[in-house]
Image (tube, rainbow, N blue to C red; front, side, top):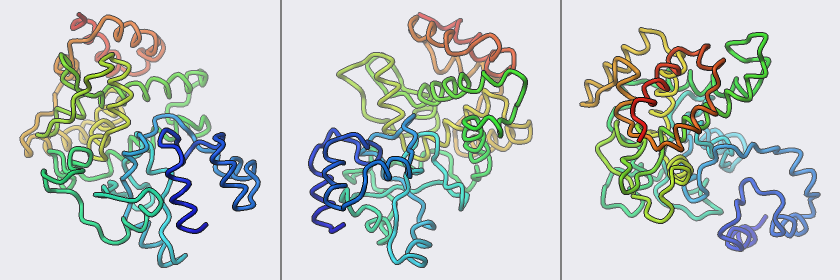
Length: 315
């Protein structure tokens, strides 16, 4: 594909998801120009479309992967695995993804490879959407705990690798729905009268943009998760690991120590996080009761404790 054709394709429809939409007319037009059967591409990629980052916020990448691409193939390739809210880490190289400062949609893999510096300047035009440094340095936290949760989430989608396998495997799909909802909840956007999700606000000194149009809790969940940075998503994974009893006491002491050293507090008890995160709209609490079944609450004591304390802060 020529650069001219690629740039034309990426500018045809700003509302289309060119990474994952294989049903749009523009996609079929591209296949016609390339003389490739659309069905072959759809079957080969089979992309999951749950918890995707918004198109304009898919700027996170693994520099080690890009270097290997150049060495092996002569060109860098942007991975679809970098486009998911639940995947802020490169599982191959065990590193937190870094953020691209600016890009052209068709050549952002080359932009990333060209040694663009991470965004640290608050005056930079893209700083509000990057802000990956957060408040707790990755050097203190390490990556293994977040990767543990990311691997656990990946295993939920494969019953054969389900880490808490029981005879009640039908709970697997329900757990996937529950974890996806809670990740979005920890990352939800700020709106008037709403302080934003724990992972977005509690572990960073910066404040994200406020949602003014659709201020419903559903819109806050969708926009907040879709516009989150690798650091924010990492903190959401750590909160998820806490709630779903993935971490050992030693793991929790490590997280608490790193947060304390950085001037942020990690609650000793989950009910403290439920209190900080509140108050909760009645409609949101009803949806939580629908998502988190009695069997699920019985299996995960941390989740049960969290939901019980959410109930005490419903408005």
